[in-house]
Length: 612
Image (cartoon, rainbow, N blue to C red; front, side, top):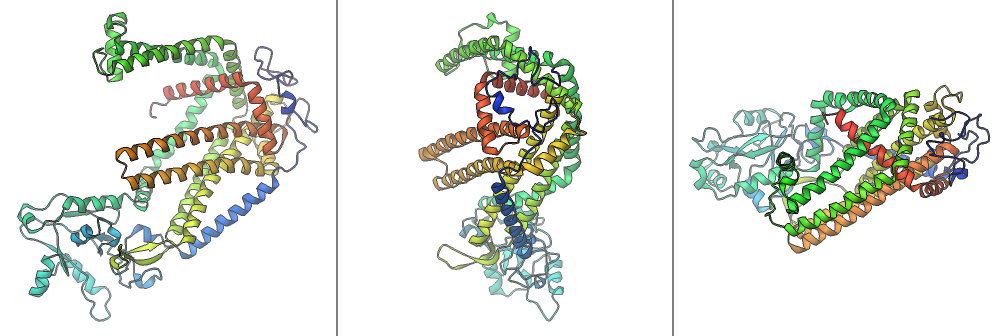
C-alpha cells in the first residue's frame, strides 16, 4: 500500500519513485492540484484540430445516413427481385424503387423455376429467371410430374384475383396449355417448368434439397447438384447471413444478456474479492502452473521422440498424456527427427522460462503489489467496475445504429436488369451501387472502426483518471466520484486526444481489412490451388501477422499514453513520447506486471467461468 502524502508505493513495492527514470516528466504541471494529489487540474483543451476533424467526420457520417434513409429500402435486401423487376413480398405499385408493378404482398419466396437457365449462367442466380411464390413447391408423391408455371396474364383491373387463382392451382396450369406450349415446357423453355427437386423456404428463398424421383430421372440431364449448390451459395451471401444473425439474436437475446452481461458482472466482483485477499496466492499459483505446463510439454516431446522411455515417467502418466493429447506416444511414429528437434527446442524454452522466473522473483513481488493496489482501488471505487458497462452499451448502440444505416445505404442502389458477358440482357434483375454509394459504404465502415476505438479509448482514459486519483490520494482527494471527475476532465479537455489516438488504431484496422479483401480476391483469381495459391496464402499470412503486431503495439502505447494524459493533461503526441520513455526505462517491470496480470486473470477467469 502507500500513504496519501507519498507519491509512490512503499519501499517494498518500488513501482514508481522520485528516482525512477521519467518520473519528473510523468508528474509535471501539478499546479492547481490538491495536497497529495498529482492529478493536474489546471488544464487546457488539447488536440483541438483533431477534435474538429472528428466532428467533421461524423457530420459526413450523418450525411451518409441521410442519403440512406432518403433513398434506401431494406426490403430489397430481405426479399428478392423476380425476372420482371418486381420485389417479392410487397405491392410494387406503391414503390418507386422497383421496375414492375405487380401486387405480391403474399408472395414472399423467390424461386428459380428454370434450372437450365441457372446452368447456362454458370450458377449466377442474379442472371437466372426467378419468380415470387407464396410457398415453395414440391414434387408431390412422385406419381405425376408437376410443374411451376410463369405468372398468368392479368385480366381486367383485378390485381390480386388472377394471382390468387394461380396460387390455388399450386402454380400449375400445364394441363391448360396448348400442345406446342406443353412441348416447349417439357424442353425447359416455358411457360411452365418441371419440378425436378423438392424445395423449402429459407429466408424467403426456395432452397432445393433431395434428389429427383426415380420415375423422372431419365427425362432430364440437368446437373441437380450444381443447381442446389448455386442456391446454397446464394444463401451464403452477406445480406442473407446478416438476416440469419438478426434472427438468431431475436431468438437468443435472453441468453446473450444473462451470459454476456449479468454473469460476467457477478464474476468480476467475485474475482475482485478473491484478488483483494488472495493476490499472492493466485499470482504464485499461476506462475507455478505455467512452469509445470512448460516442463510437462517438454517431457511429452521427449517421450514422443523416443528419447526417454515410457517407464521413465510412469505408465499411468503416459496413458494420461495420450488421452489428453489424442496422440500415440509410440517412438516409431513418422517424423521422428522433427520430434527430436522439437524436444531440444522445448528444452531450451523450459530452461529459459525457469531461469526467467527465478530472475524475476523480486519483480514478481512488485507485480503482486501492483495487483493489490489495483484491486484496492477498484473495491474503493466500485463505479470503476460499472463504468465498462457504459462502454459496452455504447458500442452496442453504435453497432446497431451502424447496421441500421448500412442496411438503408446498401439498399439505395438502382434496380437494373443484369447483362451477360456479351452485354446482352438476362432474365435477372439486381441492385446496382454506383461509385458514390460504394465510397459512402467504405466511409461508413471506417466510421464504425473509428467509433468503436474512440469509445474504447475514452473508457481507458476515464478509468486511468479514476485509478490515478485513488493512487495519489487514497480516496482522500475530496472528489465525490473519481469516475465522474475523470469523465468531466476527459470530455472538457481531451476528446481531441482520444479521437487522435483512436484514429491511428482505426487506420491500422482498416488497412488489415483492405489486405484481407485483396487476399480474398487473389484467392479467387488463382482458385486457391496449386503453388501460386500456396505462395499467396503464405505471403498474406505474413502480412497479416506483421500488421497485427503493429496494431498490438499501437494499442499498448495508446493505453499508456492515456494514463499520462489522465495524470498531467498533456496532448496526445506529448503523452505518447512520455509513455514510451517510461516504458523503456522500466521495461522489465512493465513486462512482469503485464505478464503476471494477464496470465493470472486468464487462469482464474477460465476456472470461474466454465460456461465459457
